[in-house]
Each structure stands twice: as C-alpha cells, then as structure tokens.
Length: 206
Image 1 (cartoon, rainbow, N blue to C red):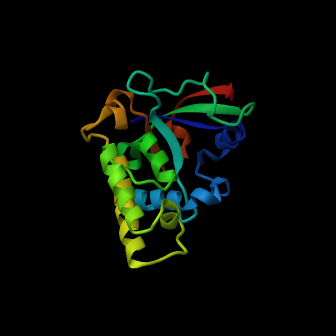
Image 2 (cartoon, rainbow, N blue to C red):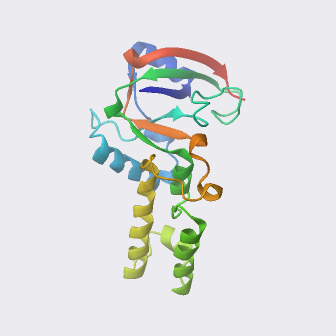
Image 3 (cartoon, helix red, strand yellow):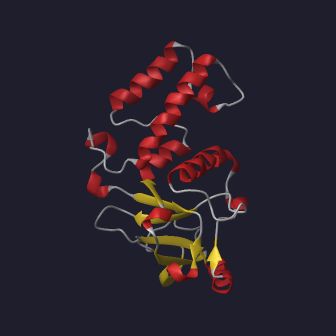
C-alpha cells in the first residue's frame, strides 16, 4: 500500500541515522488524548499490538488526501505543518496489514466528541433525545460526570465512531456525508522504517 506522511525536517535528519521512527507522545494535545487513546485501542484490535511497549501512539499518514484524483498531498496548500516549518513529505510502501485506514472527515467528528451518522435526521434524533433528558453534549464529554443515562449514550456515541473504518459503506445522503470519490482517507501505523521510504520531498510549510 502506498502512503504519504508529512514530518518535520529535523525528525527526518534523525530518521536517516536511526532508520525508524514512531510518534512522540509529547506532541499529543491534552484535550484530544482521549480520542487518540481510543484510536490506539482500535489499532490494537484491528492490526495488532505495536512492536515495542515504548510505542504509545500512531504515526499518521495519508492514503488519499483529497479524493481519488488527488491521493498525494499537495504541498502548495497550508496547514500541513505550522507556517514556515521545514518539512518533508515521505512516500511510503507498507504492508497493508500494518495499517489502519479511516475516514479523515469523520475522524474530525471523533476529535470533536460528536455522534457520527449517515444522515442529518439520525444526528438530530440523537441530540434531541439527550435534550429531552436534560443532557447536553458537554455532559457527555465531561467524564467526571457519570450516570446510567450518560453511560448509555456514551456507549452509543463510541459505537458510532467505528463507522470511520467502514470505507466501503454506501453513502445515504451526499449532502450530509459528501461524495465517495471526494473522500479523504487517513492511515495510522505504529512506526515507519527506512526501507519503506520510496521518495522524500522537502518543503517549507505555507
């Protein structure tokens, strides 16, 4: 499987010596650490454990950056790295079994602790039910709060997140989910090895 990962140039310089790299947990923001840990558990379940106990979080890469016609990330766009940062785009060839693919846009819903659905009607139904019980989105997100009701709806919320891995599902409503051919597909893997690198493109982030 061909993937692309964008990394800081300083990491790349070290990578040339170490011949492998994995994620630095110091760069995981505290406010999304729950969602990252959820992804880690999904990876363990779906592709197996990391090769070392020292590996805590995944490396992120692109399988399909912006639809089927633009799989490779376009470095002319901003937000790949902080503006002015020296970076590298590494093209990789990796074993399919070592990668977990997921829908990038849906994962943004996970990061926002949102309920993922195929239609707007399903989405509204979930949050309208919460409102009838006097519960709001912030109550679900606040894990210090606990009750049978909250735990029930949290379980439904977490179950909905697993749809990000179902990349072959039918699109019910394109106005809600977008067109399949425009799908952005991200990849997570435990580590990157030097022998997996096909090419390297240096750039300065815009």
